[in-house]
Image (cartoon, rainbow, N blue to C red; front, top):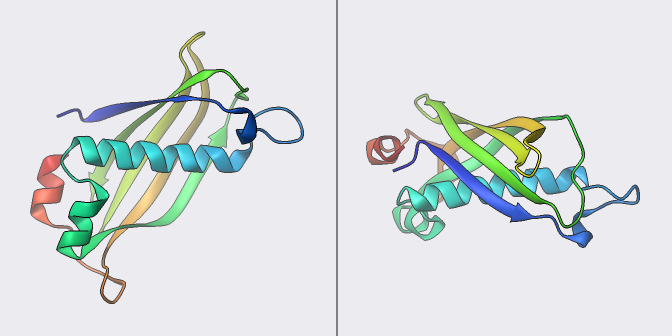
Length: 132
C-alpha cells in the first residue's frame, strides 16, 4: 500500500478563469479528489466510512501557488499523510506538471474525524490509521 499517492489529472478548459490559467478553486478540488483516491486505494472508499458512521471532514486548507497550470496539461497531485493525532490528521500535497517537472503548488489539509450521526469529532479508528 503506497504511503505516497500520485493522482493524475488532465486540466480542462472549464477549470480556467478569465486570465486563462486554472482557477484557484480547482486546486482544492484536485486535492480532495487525490485524498479520496488515496483513501480508496488504501481500502477506505467513501461508502466504507458511511457504513461505519464516521469519517473525515476538512478543518482547513493551506495552498501556496507557485506556477500556473493551463488547459490540456497533465498534472500530478502527489499526496501523503504526515501524521495522525487523536481526532485529526494532516495531509500534504505537491501539485506538479510532470512534462517539465515544475512544482505548481504545495498544500496541506487539516482533516477531522467525526461521527456522521451528530457531527461530533471522535477518535480515529485504529484500523484507519493502520491502513496508511
